Length: 161
Image (cartoon, rainbow, N blue to C red; front, side):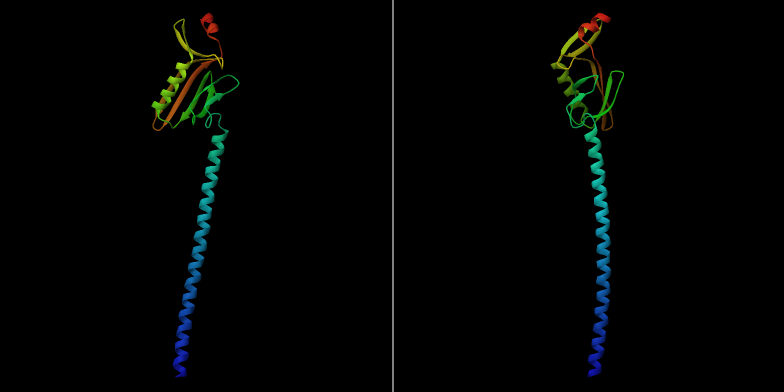
């Protein structure tokens, strides 16, 4: 009977060793999966942080007014500033083009309207800037907004032309 008991104990010990080996492999796999998940989550966090930093550094994304040394006027929030060249400011936005057009229609309605020398423009007397147009170009989901402006008074524009 001792032999039988010893054999059974050896078989049980072998089974336990196999189970322990499989458990240690499972534990190693779990640790490896956790490390991969940590790297993935850290990568996502870094990408989001970089995107937010870029948006925060942009002149207009979280603001509702464009300000530069040349001009100052209202723009829809979440508009990404692209350029300001030759008195034309360009923005990109993901907002619906109808909403952007409606925003600029309402904004221009608040300004003083002028028409002289076959030219139509709007004057923002608080910011002392003349706006000629606000065009919204649609390309797929991205809309491009171009605002033509000048740092003049209406009297200067009407005199020079």
